[in-house]
Picture 1 (spheres, helix red, strand yellow):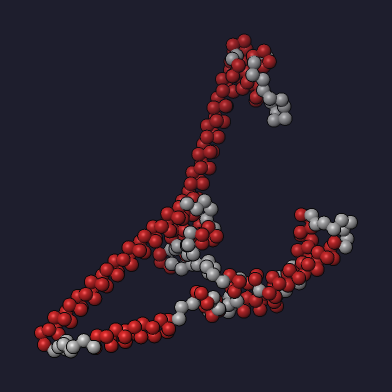
Picture 2 (picture 1 turned 90 degrees about the vertical axis):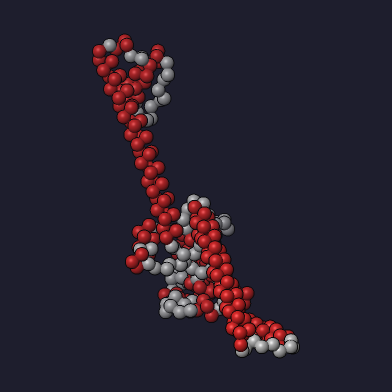
Length: 279
């Protein structure tokens, strides 16, 4: 997830709603899953293996055989532009259409017409039951006026409660997503989908921004520590050289180690620890 892209699509003046893939039926919309591509590749790979094994003394494949085998199978499968274009068209990518919505699994489909009919049947049954009650004056006079008011206020109260519960649920879900996003160690489509997050919104942008800022801070801290260590080492070496010039016999073991270390190459033996060995 590159930060410049996330900043661009979440710019308030021209915000984009970016999603990655869909959470179901990947065998329908993934181009690589088309039989003319993936199926042909498997067939060509099997042919390549049979042909390749003819030139081997032992019927065994090594890791180094992968590239030659793929080079033999790829041009006749994924490498065929005509098949790839057909797969892209059939799966609704170019031209863009609603192909994925026409092939939804049955378990993901809801027949709204049937639900409406069932609801109508229930309402009719309830109405019939109500009509069996002795007739009352609901349509005229003061009783009708106050009854309408009661019904109106009841509907308003139900609407307010429903709206409140909806807002509360949305806020709770949003907070849960934010908390889940904070636990992601690496920002990728797979990790985002695992937390039920499928959009590249400002939360993902802020997460990437925080991680990059933390990485930069860690690098800066490591560099500062390295610079401090190097500066301390240089000061120690400088002091040791001054002592060596003024009074060679007054060198301490750390001074000797600093001098020997400055003249030692990485391939040399480790620096000794005792004074007698450092002389």
